[in-house]
Amino acid sequence: MPQSSRWRAFAVLSAVQLMIIIDSSIVYVALPAIQTHLGFSAAGLAWVVNAYMVAFGGLLLLSGRLGDLIGRKRMFVIGLSVFTVASLLCGLAVSQEMLVAARFAQGAGGAMASAVVMGIIVTIFQEPRELAKAIGASGFVAAAGGAVGGAAGGLVTQVAGWSWIFFVNVPIGVVATVLAVRLVAGDRGPGLAAGADVAGAVLVTAGLMAGVYAIVKVEEHGWGSAHTLGLGAVSVVLLVAFVARQARARSPLVPLRVFRAPNLAGANLVQVLMVGAMSGFQFLTVLYMQRVLGYGAAETSLAGLPVAVVLAAVSLGLSARMITRFGPRAVLLAGLSLLTAALVWLTRAPVDGRYAVDVLPSMALLGVGAGLAMPAVMTLAMSGVRPGDAGLASGLAGTGAQVGGSLGLAALASLASGHTARLTAAGQGGLPGLNAGYHLAFGVGAGLLAAAVVVGLLMLRSAGPDLAADRDDAAFEPHPR
Image 1: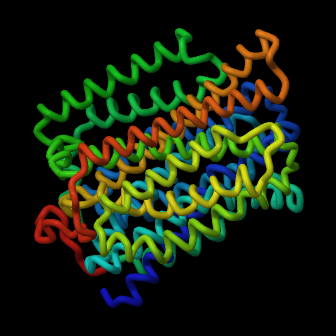
Image 2 (image 1 turned 90 degrees about the vertical axis):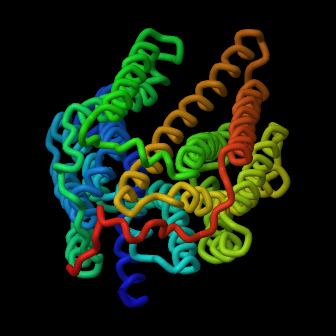
């Protein structure tokens, strides 16, 4: 494929990925309007978010493997089509049940499309420097989507109404589908018969959905509740049964050989720890600025701009050159160290903090650290993976990020609120107690990142940026569109 065609295909993949990521965060700002219009209770309203998250997190791994079997381009187009139609149904929803069901379908479509994106990227970019640039740009898209979603959600809801946060996906999805069919190179997998493990599919999907559901309901039930522990146990049992099934199945859904790739398990564990800490960082920093420093919504949005600017500069330019020169492992460890420093800096932020001294340095460290670490960890996760397993490896990475983000946010937010509640009960509440809760969570987040550094040192080996291992694997053959 000519260079210009590769980058046009990449632009389509990135646009779809950005749309899906924005959609996962844009709905938060519109929730009050949705509640008023459709009459949701507070508990019911949470399902507008949870239905999407459960479907998305539960289906990433299955979607990635199915993409390897039936063709990643085909899975991408199917997922994009499902996402687009579901977005239309969300905007047309006239009842609570219709909206929640459409959001579940949206999450399913988003998982189907997202799971194979990295697998497609590593097959169309075979030159190491180009691949490093593509992964860096993909990392920026992933990081920027959440920030764009929050700002766009408020603007669209205020100007056009909440339905339009879903309607805007429809023309984008239609155009992107047409362009994907024309620009993304076709591929041919071995077919469902090579991995048509129905029992395995049921086990892994149910296990992941149970786990994600347990995590998203932690705030309502608590970590030690029968609900959380029971669902967590069910999730673990199902996933263990899935692994046992894959070891015995004649045509496994997830061939365990994929874990022979030298860095796959270690990179995914690093990603769980890293994304978990970063999700808590972003959420709690907003709360610190609004609840402790007294910033309004507009001030908070402006205060977060340095992260996006620095992250764009690093991930779109610097990261590819550094990965090519020093290798992804060294770049990842440097990025994780900077992210750790960002959270450590916030553990000393005072009640009367100043933005330039107490917040901005951590924002700059986060931007540089994430801009280096995110492309590097994805490069490592995909290195040495057979072409026929690239969709599965991509789905594993997406699942790790989704579960890590949900778990990290729930855990750090729970730790912060719990510590503040204990201090308040002891007569040490108010802003100092609130701030102390944030300090504890930032410290634990720094600990997660330090653990990620240790995992990187012990489990990851140096690897070049060339992910094109075993290109002659006959299990996955490119063919003309």
